[in-house]
Length: 441
Ligand code: GLU
Image (cartoon, rainbow, N blue to C red; front, side):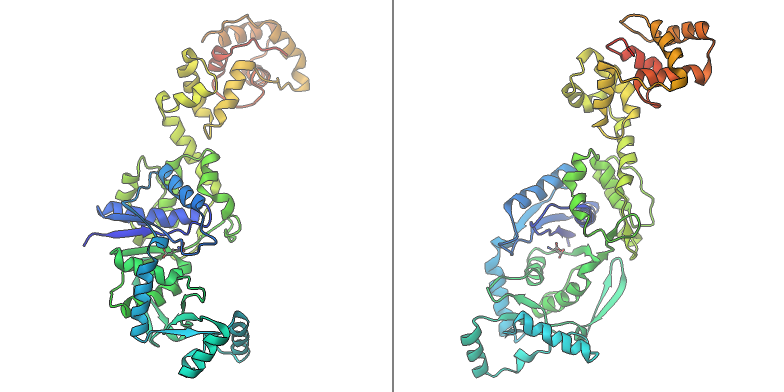
């Protein structure tokens, strides 16, 4: 049996960190076992599904290096869903129902008032053949509901452990809408069977779907894959992330300068008992991936954690990996290697390179505390002319020290702030040798 997993986003928006977790877990499981990973676009909703998003999902996964062995689109498989729906009808597991949303709502409210669970009462099952003809004439096509077997549905969840859901507490799911649109719950079952999916990892919001899908699969004469439900992400303080997920799209994080291996390394471990380690490749992450180490508790995600990891990746990069970015800033070739050597330990993302280059090229607006203004004026008057080299800083500061009597931090910090406009940065000897302009006040 070839382990086969899938990532099944709906192309109705950009994918975000929450989706990435699902994609990555499924990818790593397949990768670790030499299995197959399928990208499936759940696009049965023609109004909300957009080609633009389908393209963006693929671009985002490509950026991350998450590659798929096969891509499938549900909109290409409508015939298969129709054929399988027919089988459910023949088997007596599918029935048509005509309640309007308002009627259903009313029923739910009544049930809740009476302290009953708001489960669909199967009124449509009691309609006679004549009633059905009349309903169809009055209301047109109904929705198609799957008739659940009233039993406990049990499975061993790969993350949550043994689970069981009483089918009596769940409404018979609508699988086909009145307008004929096949809903995800059903399309997904047909796909998972046809595509030989062996493992389904998805968010804990799908637990009830899983229960009904296990029954639908059985009704179609199939076994079911192994299921695992990962916890949902929350913000750093445990707050719901749903509203902010829009700003945590993979493309936004990428645009903010997050390095792909920083994101992947964090997401492969966050919410598990294993520590986050910065991995060099997806293969390395697959090697150490263990679904059973993940817990049921909501997983806190703090975007800020991505930046120290990104900085660590950047520090290790050879010049060749950033030569293009550096050239794009206008750094002359002869300075590129020195510039990278000096700047790399002082950046969080590649975007920070621009600020350092601007400093070296144009100089900074000096920051001078009131009590240092005479000192700085005196020191700047002693600055040699360009070109500067590795000795410029020590020669200059020695001369300033002799002339002013200042030493140590009282000597160096005001000079650093006046030359660079900041309190922190590379060694001043390195800053000076890279300066392309004599500092002025
Ligand atoms: N399209 C579904 C979703 O994005 C897929 C869920 C599943 O993995 O079965 O929630």
